[in-house]
Length: 580
Image 1 (cartoon, one colour):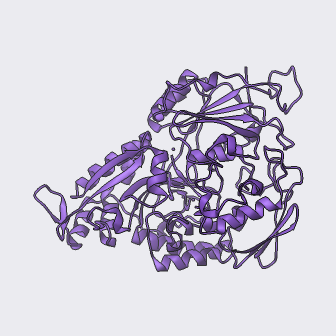
Image 2 (cartoon, helix red, strand yellow):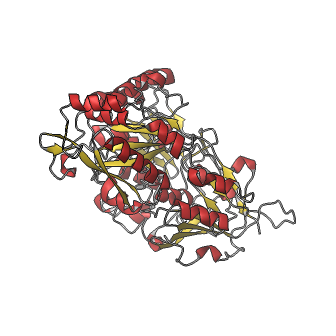
């Protein structure tokens, strides 16, 4: 899994986590077959039809259950606090967005969007006027109004709430309700990516307005289906932790386009390999991320449609710079030379060739290859060079002990590398990292942790020595301030590694304070040089997540999944249907 990044979700995200984290944190990041078999449930096909009955066998059908596989449980579906892939998937299906993206990544108004038209932007790029539809309703029948949008933005801005997406709204100076369905948002400064910030999912003010901001994250809203009022095509019906999450079509859904699929089951498996076997056997209808090692086996099955392509995700190693996360308060990679040595010691191309089977692309900075912000050779490239790594470590004062592990000032160069359990790609990469660093005298202890627990107890509060994770861009903009700026330490931010670099702090602000893309690119080139030199992360690679889709799932070409978008595997899912 990858974490989702609110402002780029990547940072690039990962991307990537990137950052925080797939574990890509995520910019964003991902049990058992003896559980009840929700996929066998038959939905009520009389509810909310989106099309008249037809004799045409190729026409959309109303009814049926779509079973989606995953190996990560959700944490909370409250849109204000979603910071991981699994929760983000459920948020996408349960809550309507103010604005959506088209296939090319442009902001658009869809029949299922809450906005009535694109935002009106003032000449100085500081005022955004949003007009909402007057027909949208919450699942409890209450209207969705300007009050909900104002409440949501003000809550995200409030540091007491601890919203991971605070960086995308803290440039807001005021949020004014013009009338019941119009909101005027005035920025304190130019913030170039702000249009993408408006892809938010409002929460119900009438349910949450009396909850203290500091108590919202622990509130039952987003964690208890019975107490979570939603706005999307499907309602939340059940959650069996570690087994499955179930959604049902809302018979009173407000949108002009109604969902054909009447039930969605998000079924949790122990690991990715088990997921793939379930797809091949027909126990699930779609697997969102097929491991490369299993791809050939899936492609041999002519009943399964495999969708491949570059994604908005990247993988990385994040170092933690808070001494409290180390038993002896000693941070072994606190010096820049040591971090650069680690980068040289890692055979990243070998990871791409042998683990990703050539489906990835090396990255040296948090900007996706091929995007307008791709820095090219402005970012430092660390070729695999174990001898160079050893030389840098020696220059930094590290000396090999009797067991071959380096030591300095009485401290061994040893640290734990955490990643999410069940992720076969990260398991393989962690083993390569362990061996590569052992070859230069560094001891790495890979540790796999249940993802939901990991996010809640380690990633969000920034309590880990080092992590292997990924970021996924939640929008096409490259702004990565929320991940790398010292303004966004936990809990009100995604800089979970406690990294501080005053030069980068300023450059991120410079990068979004102008709207001209060419001017922004020059600034991001400077960021790429600085961040790839200082290395708060070792950026590994951009990677793809092939999606497998079973024979029951049908959609028109214009509604097919879009790999380049964060939740693109559910693109236009409201219009999909299931064959008998």
